[in-house]
Image (cartoon, helix red, strand yellow):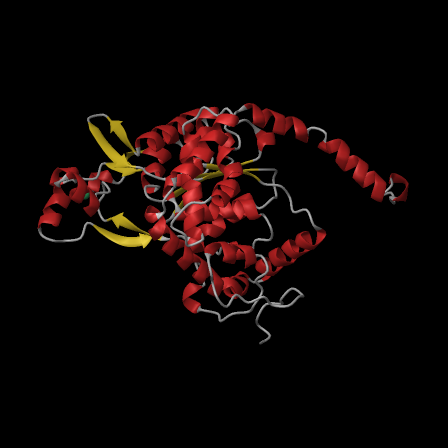
Length: 401
Ligand SMILES: [Zn+2]
């Protein structure tokens, strides 16, 4: 090990040699510590090198939910709910290195070959119809992107509007907004409960239709906007409207790490990462690549995963027992179960798949739950004070100054 390489936290390296399934990798992921070849190509952007997903300690539910939503776009994303400092946004941003490939349109309006195949030549814009006729490609294979919608975005930023540079180019007078750029991508909103209502409405409209129309004066444009929504929120800071809450496929309550070992491990990894991001990421590069390939492969197989009738019946009974009205309950439950089966390289959903994904798929389908969650936090100050007073009694403090 040469000196320039990062200091490895104590403990035996646990090298993944064979990947049986994505689940297996996820299972082992938090123990990965092997130093692997530093691949220059995979070092990421100098400005923004996300923490490796596989280096996240613990938080199995959070990691599983994010992995499932990557491999099944029909899941409609994930909402991570928990206090500050529990690694929610770090985890979401760490997906950057795991993103699978998707067909991406070369056209301003997002036309794709598959639309001509299913809807005929009129399904695409005139330019693309011409290109298609000449046998030119309308799309190319590209990585899914993680598009972030910042809290300070204006409605204009989100839906698009008049392009200030348009005078130079009379054909492009409307500029695309964040929702259009999120098409076939992941749309991430941190602190989603603090977004203003107008923007929430725009997201809900686009999500419901898979497209939206912008009108400015005599101009209008319709943009495709089919995205998986990923949100994170601290429920102590504000409510989330029920309509947008319902829009998220999976919901995970994220808590702080419980064991002292995990907390120490997480601290050490964070420290190593901050000391030398490239070197830290390089340690995980090999396994990250394997994991990404597993996600891609599972994603391609998901359409072949079958949901047997008797399993579907059990799922519906569960939803009936819980008295959940939203139709999204079963959509999410079944799509998540199919993703889970695909991750395990199976072509049939079984009861285990249902059991494992049900809490994420069915949690918080009733809005009263959030209020209870907030009520549970209110005694925390008292708890904190008690713990501090017990370990560090006030009389032991030296007076400062
Ligand atoms: Zn087009």
